[in-house]
Image 1 (cartoon, rainbow, N blue to C red):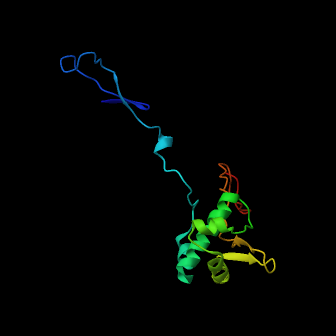
Image 2: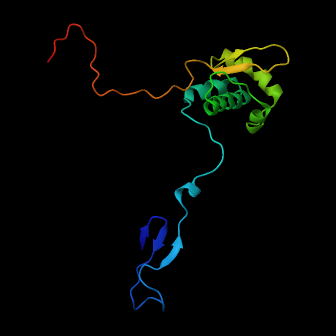
Image 3: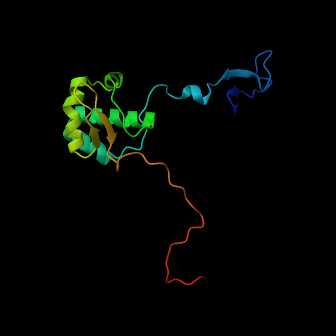
Length: 152
């Protein structure tokens, strides 16, 4: 059997091949890699296990809320976000569970909250040390700074 891109071919000996079958005849097609990938929403990482553990130590609902906040921050790319009801539903949460668990998550040092007044949803952000950071640029010719060192 020989594979070429998305098509599978069989090599057949003439004596064993059925009538009209030539070597290289199309037998089946493969699905492109894009179709094999799972569809749907996902969490964007990395999320440190330590942060997951700290949220889970508060409560399972707090963990779900922390993951929802992390997800929304990653998807929107904004520092301060709201947590709309549709987002909460995706994580199995309600408005009441959000209001009950925002402060304990903040007390655990995972998020910061900006209260905007009665009747308005608060703005939240990942604690600055938890926020996703852009990848570092690596420079090939960077020398450590050392005033005492002589050039080679």
